[in-house]
Amino acid sequence: MNTIETLFKEWQSLQPVKEEYQQRLDQKFMLEFNYNSNHIEGNTLTYGQTELLLLFGRVVGEAKMKDLEEMKAHNVCLKMTIAEAGEKDRPLTESFIRILHQTMLREDYTVYRQLPGGVNTSYVVHAGCYKTRPNSVITPTGERFEYASPEETPALMADLIQWYNQAEADGKLTPVELAALFHYRYIRIHPFEDGNGRIARLLMNYILLRHGYPMIVIRSKNKKTYLEALGKADKNVGPVPSDGANATLEQAQDFVNYITKQVEQTLEDDMNFLQEKKDAVWWFDGEFVTFKNESTIQLLKYLVEHPQATVKELTQVLSINKSAVQKQLETLQGKGYITRVGTRKEGKRIVNLISTTQKGGK
Image (cartoon, rainbow, N blue to C red):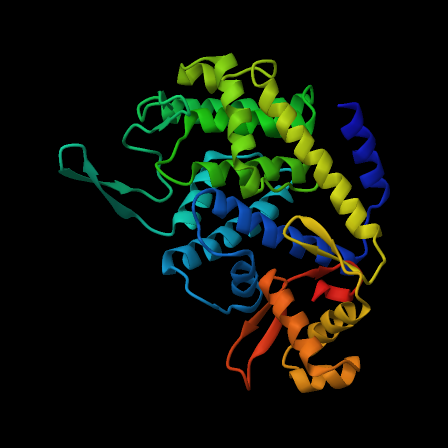
């Protein structure tokens, strides 16, 4: 924990952050967390579509209505989580978790499945209610891994909340250890029929934020590593759900180590983001993007302020020929850095990159 303690002290030394910088950090996290946490669970919206939806209320390209509504609801849940974390004197409650789940799923819905042999079956997923049927997952080795039963879930959840509030008051665990261990214990219960992973990641960030840490993003491209860390902890704890729901820090150490590394990386990235002053450096989906071509930098900066700029206008402003402008636009669109919205005459080019230097990041 020495590395993270050093980074956290450096992070604290930068507080309070200027409002305009904090707005960029908040926007950066909001887009990445919503996109990645939902993408892990199968949402098909791209990063650019997520940005257009959440920042501009626009939809471009093909998209499932379910994925759009899911993304918007998840963003509401994130806002609720941030607000709740700010209530320092209010303990975590089961009621808040159930309301969070109800907001995320929006309403009850029916799942239809065909069993081996052609038998059709269905069940109802209840928004905001603990599960009424067993849930499990198939491990990479082909074995079925069972979570807590519907009958034992209410008691285990009550114990989890009581343990968390007491552990937070005792202060024996660091905030990062507490957040990671809570995530692991919650997942071993799997209290709802759907949405458990997303709720776990929200609550983990709730704990980090309460203690002054930046919230973290588990990236969908790292899903395998994330699940492997959970799986290693499962092997240490064993298959009994109640043991998992009461796992010790030592038993879940593999997962705690994984989350610790994510927090370290987030601290480094956020501090680098705040301290970066070069116009050539932007942020996109978890990575710094540096442009060496001065005309590209000027093109992006101009589009931020003039999204409806025409190719002709850009050639005049940048003092380069039309084909060069078109080639740059095609390259930037191909990488997802900009998105074309609307008709050719009236449409806008939205810059999906977040500037490290410009006010508002847009």
